[in-house]
Length: 250
Image (cartoon, rainbow, N blue to C red; front, side, top):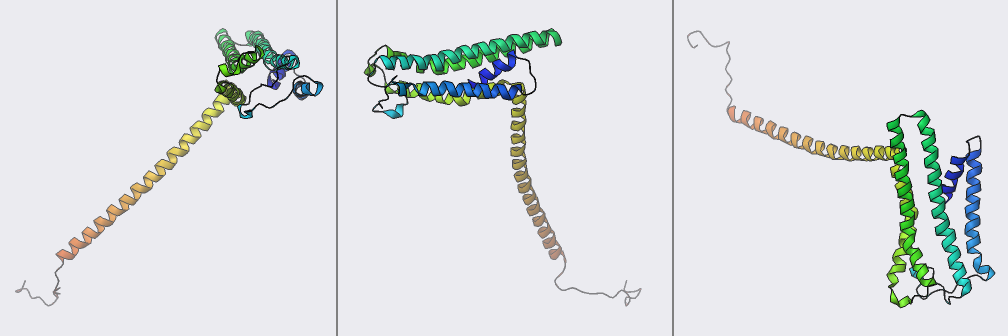
């Protein structure tokens, strides 16, 4: 939510000195205010926190379900699902048209189409991922609001939906980083560096093994040569003085 609000402000207003810092502080303060408002509902009698017998399921069920609880549930759905979905869709729509207008004046037609297609794909992936992540969790809450018998569906539904929603805090930004050309280039560089390091390690170990084998072969050859030399040299060496030999003896 912080990122989407920040993008809307930066995209709709001209960039000047200090705008990024002020807009980020404004957006971050607004998100803290939103979360604080939702957390303060029980202090004013809206929703009664009564822990369920299986708190490890991490779902949003409080009993008894009276009118204040219904108001609390609906408020959470609006604040943390409906409003962020509209915000994400609006922010990427604004960014798309801003990018389209700016690129049409400075880039070629083929590059414009490529850039617009990239923005459209990013918009669909991020918005669709957010909706698909939180929609099962919202359905479970709506089932509670509708008074559906709790024993009619499994406990694992709550567990699965809540875990997917929590993990989305990691993999939704990862999708955007991977799709961004600048970060994707950095990721490719990191991957290539890791591959090169692994290759160097494997090659160095292989060269070391080959060198050791080569040294062993050379040692065996030297021993064999020494053995052949020892076999050819007679055991009782006879020294002949060529100076004492006469012509007739030769």
